[in-house]
Amino acid sequence: MLAPACGTVACHSSTTKVQGYAFDTLDGARAALRELVRAGAPEQSRLLDVITSRQMPPDAPLADQDVALIEQWIAGGAEGL
Image 1 (cartoon, rainbow, N blue to C red):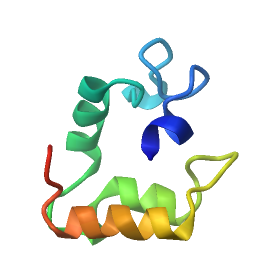
Image 2: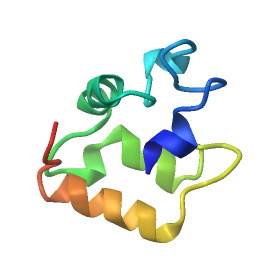
Image 3: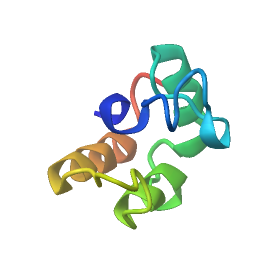
Image 4: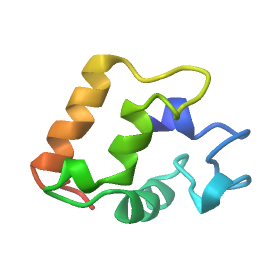
């Protein structure tokens, strides 16, 4: 769900890495998420801050159900990181 919205060439791709993050590959996304997510603590996770405040993605905010799913994933321990 983050790759289509965030992993574009103009933003967080392997070639651009805005803020040093790339979401267009699995390795890049995992590396970024390890910095942006505090497993089990959505309220302390930068990722959730930027997507709930609608700062990111700037042109097409994530749907509410996608934000809720990410929050649940973080609260549940962010499996896969």
